[in-house]
Image (tube, rainbow, N blue to C red):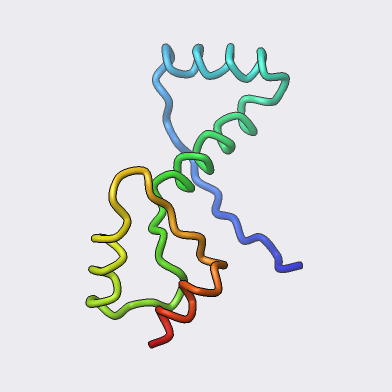
Length: 87
């Protein structure tokens, strides 16, 4: 199993936001720190590019963007997609 690399960052959170996040974390039974980490990871997954690592050719990236459309997701482990991207 590969080691997970993380980055520590001190952030400022406005008090009303802090209060809401604290309350929600408490309701979910997790620490505020863990709750915020989970939110950030979920958001990063939602917006991360769906392009497999190493694909940099702008023509391929453009085709993926066209094919993607709204609500479409590409599984980077899909053998068929890997075959197409390897061409």
